[in-house]
Amino acid sequence: MLIKQLSVFLENRPGTLDEALKILKEAGINMKALSLADTSEFGVMRIIADNPDDAKQAMKKAGYTSIVNEVISVELKHEVGYLAGIVEKISKAGVNIEYMYAAPSEDSAARMIIKTDDAARAESAISG
Picture 1 (cartoon, rainbow, N blue to C red):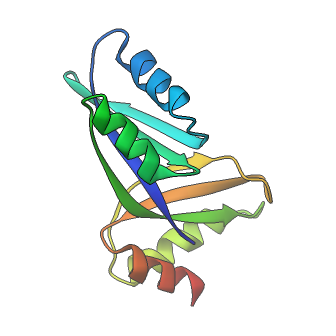
Picture 2: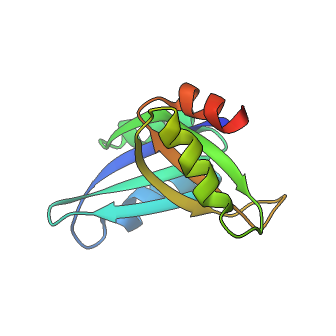
Picture 3: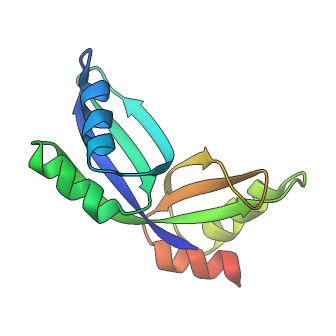
């Protein structure tokens, strides 16, 4: 299923993550998943939230750079090779996977959030 993800660019220094999470809390943003990656100078906080557009506005108002983009949310089954099969379908469709991370699920053990260079085509490959 295609969903929206908020990516927020954070300076890599003590307290930045704390500040960003407080902004989201004060804006009433409910986060369902979060991934944090860093380099020596900056980090990228990726969030699946109830309302990513409101989250983006709250971060913008506080001076943070952020973007909302489409990602794929895939429910994972407890089967050996299940994720490998999904990745194979995306690969065979000629779509590049840029990154992915695990997230909790209400319906199954877990789900995978997958960012590709063509979300619609990847979703079609998975569904077909």
